[in-house]
Length: 270
Image 1 (cartoon, rainbow, N blue to C red):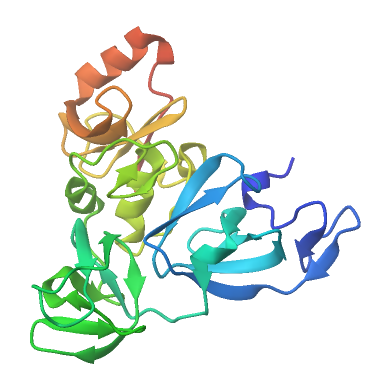
Image 2: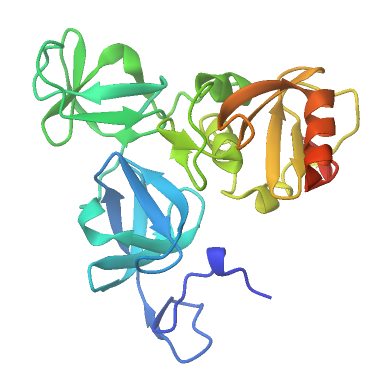
């Protein structure tokens, strides 16, 4: 059975090699997200399933009625993005490496910021100033807030901890709002480790493990995932705290079971 989330086809078009029901085979048109956060939806005006960040690539297979159907380059997730939130292809050189930052119209922190960007947003740097980097499009970002893409982080837990206190948002992928699998994906992608977007897919990462818990281990419940900080504490985006929060591992296991969501279903180690 095919997974709709990863199948680059709708009822009208399909990526070459994926047509199965009379769809027209098309070649992708590469675009770049040009807003701070773009919702990736199950259908036009449908429910948000995931989010894409400024500078991320999106391969468009069809444009129709203001919506672009296509594939997210970071993980192959398929869905619909508002056409107005996509721009010309751009090859990023840097990413936001702090919880969040602002974009400025000039290289002066006293100028009025024009937008806010989340950790993980990508951009192409075109010039260097004393305290700012100029990015493609003529905007400026503070130097301490970015790092070259070819310099990934080394510890997913450290990345996840940058999101501490971020509000919980179903389907969220940014420091403005994030869910459990979005947090795990952000943490691993920042370390140069491929990671799918939903917890059921993430269960295929790493190898089966058992206690004692180790830093970076993944714990899964039905529809939920958390990262172990050490052998006693985990960090996760969750609807109990409505935020990214720390929680003792054994307490979390007992609480989640008691609230009716069952026991741990998997323990994976990268």
